Image (tube, rainbow, N blue to C red):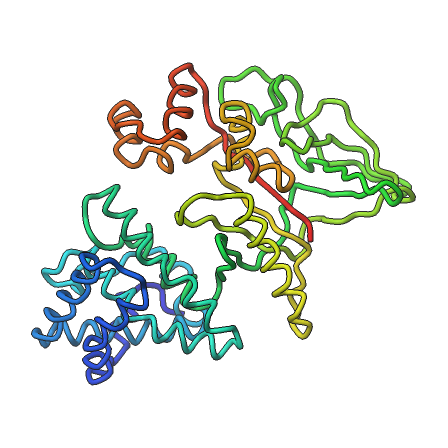
Length: 392
């Protein structure tokens, strides 16, 4: 099995004619990605540079062949996860800035994505619906790094390794991919009342607010794996707002049915940067994805619901934001769960790279969300993130 891009490139003979024809189509492909005029000019200029340089054209044809192969195979062949974690060799780009070159590659791979969707029997509109993420990630790169393009691990990899192969599908405002249920959660439903009982399954230190304790925080109690005996489970319950309770509860299987257990098939939800998360858009996405899988009766994948882990599901947001704001309402559309570790990228997501490096005061607080989170942080608050699930 190959283990690096260098090894793969050395063993790949790119099709120069195909590479040239693809580069000539870049203006049309950029249109499909909903790019702004200033954004479109970048891959178009890169395409002209590559076309005018035989060595660059050869390297482009090689890497394009590898990426197209990976997209059509869902990156399940010789391009392994270890390879995907490794950046491309610098020699491929020549004197073209890496972010610009990766931008060109992402746009150039759109036809391979169209083929992959046809091969998998996926509706082509599912791909076209998601191509605006190219523009969104380009905006993210400009905002955080002052460059018009894509970064390998922050945009390019998501588009080429996940969106174009049809591994992640867009349904309205949100995106989803196949996965298995969290390994540390059990969900029960009362057979008569329909009441949901969630148990945390694992050893976690918890503070007196019912949160997974951060380093140095006082520990109020420690959870354990639920004990099952004679058809019942005793464990530490989790409230719908993601807090762990110290008093254990019992779920007798004569009264409760198990709805979700580790290893069950579910969908992992992704939340792209594409505008407000209004309750209407969230519910519409949930409705669409549920209907999509309900109609695919021949599929072996039968998801029981949706899960996600994100800074957006930190329960503290319900305390520092108005109750009718989009994020608290998003959280309340399902059940919150504590994060497995109290680490969170809220500062990067809300304030950007400069704030992570220099502090939140190094950037202006323009939005209502930035002001609310900024004030909370200034008072000594911390963000832990959180997890979310919603059953079909």
